[in-house]
Amino acid sequence: MIYQFKVTLKDVEMPVWRRLQVEGETSFLEFHYILMAAFDWMGYSLYEFDLRKSGGKRLNGTRIGPEEGTPMIESDPLLLMLRQRLSNPEDYDLPRYLAGEKEKLSDWFKQDKDRVIYTYDFRDDWEHEIFLEKKLDPDPESQYPLCTKAKNDAPFEGARRDLMSGQLDLTNPNGKEIAEDINETYRFDGWKDEFLSRNDFM
Image 1: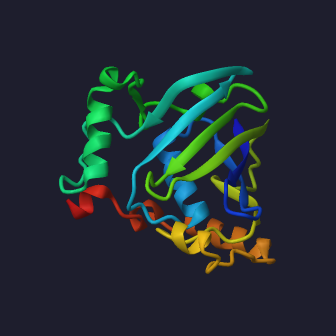
Image 2: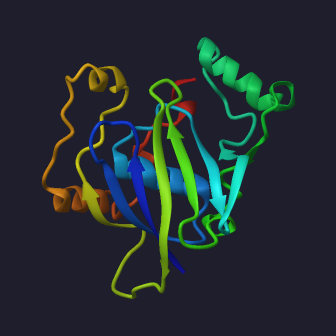
């Protein structure tokens, strides 16, 4: 089964979104890479999926992300704090992360309008609202993942300050070209290897 999502980047002063079609058996870790390609993120930063609605029921405090024990930069105070919180969430009244490589989209996106917030980079706090629009039968003429529509550019890595100061214009009227570029990435062999891993700069 193919899941069609509308993924909207929040709090960027203009509409920035992608319509994506993804196989339901895709893991959340794989989905993380699909989203990075769709929004031009590079992979320098941590991420999480905050599950807000599943099977039509509201959720609170259920998160999916890197498996506990994922290496982080020892010298970064923010990441040390996050490591402590992830390692001992009961001390902070926080839930444990479910491992992204073990959870599938079909486990949580049960029906239309189920919703998840994907946060990339806890410093710049890029929040994306992921909304399940519908489920589709696979098209034998299509390859997945697939971006079918896009609106405006996403900001570049670490650009929150530039965006807030008005130095960054995300306007791009050529949504068709954006979608084509995204799909070109998905069709490239080994495309996930193009993204950085936190292990690369340990």
